[in-house]
Length: 133
Image (cartoon, rainbow, N blue to C red):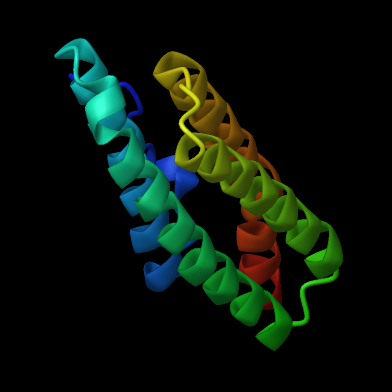
């Protein structure tokens, strides 16, 4: 059973963004499954690489949609994106220098960030899109 279950309430009804969010859910669940099998450290480099790529593509996509639709909280949303990008970059650099990263802590961090982001600023953007038509 996956750790992070996708809920309909997470949908923004922007297919490109929703697919990307589901990809991140898949990464979290991939890390969880590997941890259950005792392979958390084995998949960590792959997960961090995927996160770096996800961040680059997804944040660009969201910010482009927000700019296109004149979302008033775009700058606050960008700041959330920058913070996560910096945190993932720092973890990647730690790993590159041979430091061990706690997979349970990474998984917990990602789950909490995604839940907060989906239920917070992304939901606000989805609501904004519905209101503005």
